Amino acid sequence: MHRTAFLPGMLTVLVVLSACSPTAVAPSPSIVVAPSSAAAWQSASPSQSSTPTNAPTTSPTEDPVSGTPYTVQRGDTLAAIARSYGTTTQQLQAWNGDRYPSLAASPNVIEPGWVLTVSSEPNVTPRPTPMAAPSPPPTGSGCTAANRVSAGSAQTFRTIPDAGPGVALTFDMGGRMDPAVDIMSFLVANDVCATIFATGVMSQTEQGQQVMAIIRAHPELFEIANHTMYHCDLARGGGGSPSTDPCTGGPFSADRIRRELADAEAILRDGTGQNPQPYWRPPYGSINQAVLDAAASAGYTKTFLWDIDTVDWKPITDGGPTAEQIAARVVGNAVNGSNVLFHLGGYETLDSLRLIVPGLRDRGFTLTSLSDLLN
Image 1 (cartoon, rainbow, N blue to C red):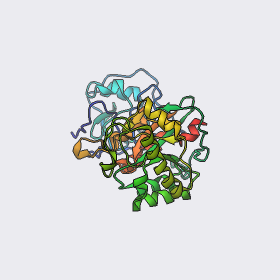
Image 2: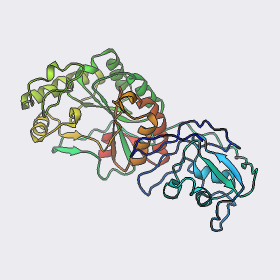
Image 3: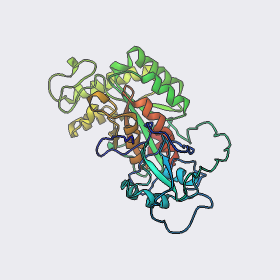
Image 4: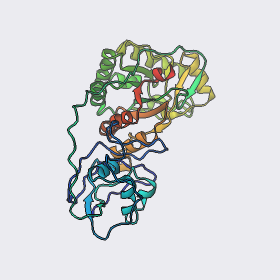
């Protein structure tokens, strides 16, 4: 039996194809993610109940000696399998819990290749799935980017308090640029609002200019924010991208911090037609009170860190996450007002977004900008 290995501590998204052949193939809804709270989400359509029609209502019985096996496929959920075979998720847990102990605590997580007992009778075939009406094209679900807040007093955010059921997808553009344009095009095609934290130097590259043009063309979806000129570690010195030369000399003075922000601001204004003030993100998340004070004196009073770090800047070959692991982390851990950190040059970012966007929407979140959450 094929089993899938996952990193310790990671939530699980089921998108790995099984090497096993199913006895009978049941309908496979979209991806399955293990939620991090009691607000568990099902990957089936919101109109579908997690309990099948005419399903047994008696207490679960013991695992039958003989019955119908089913090999879990990519995209399956326990609820969908239960619907297909006219049983309940509780019964499937009872029949298969000894073989797969994690089912008792995490029924929303099943792995391709698992062989589940789905009926006490042998050779039962799945029920036919009614033809559903075509799904409407994806929408932004009310996302907004053109409502930037005023400077006001200095504030630092990880999540956005009192934001309601919205999640901000934020993208840093301060280093590697592939596949930045493809990511932006995906967001446009799927009506996803986002906040883009760009450095001045990367905004001047060929791909950076294309990103700026997309932001300019879609102010209803994208807002620009400042990520400094050279991506230096302002609190400690060092860092930098694509060159470390502008970042030498230890911690930055207030004047040097203001110059980093002002130089980037001029480029971002010219490229997008938007004033990035008062939004900025310190490179590496490196801040102290002196850095915050200097940024505020330059008009950047809203400092954005993050509550979910995708670590998408790290390639798989160096121990970085797969697209499935990124999606599990984001969809499983998102809460109202979450501020998710991606990179436009992230290695698995684009593939992860193909899972994250429908996954978060299935959980009832609006994918929107930081401005929208703040408002």
